[in-house]
Length: 168
Image (cartoon, rainbow, N blue to C red; front, side, top):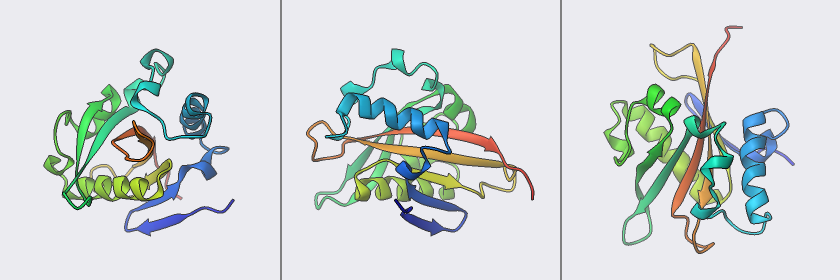
């Protein structure tokens, strides 16, 4: 299976499935949700059992997409942030992504959420250029769509992995 990719300045958006073999965290999250859904439906919020995710909870976020009356994505709100995510991005629980001090971060989250909503499947976002202060880091975020009715995606489960980038 080939990789479906969209490259944007400093980051890429891709379907997560093709990263299973090379990224243990992708395999971990995809397998977790497949065990609950049988691979036959979108995951529900009730499929998330924190006790079974203790090893990754510090790296997890849950966000809700917000749409205008025409059904167009207009905002993404942060509902839950793991401690590692808060330490990296700052506390944003209960807030719009657009209040983040970096408009570039907010724009990337918005584009990533839109990409996941459009694909209706888990996607992997990789940021290669963060900022001048954090140019030694690389961030990968896996977005998993959640739907209570298997039609409307009403939440996004995110797993955030921050790694040190090595110069070539």
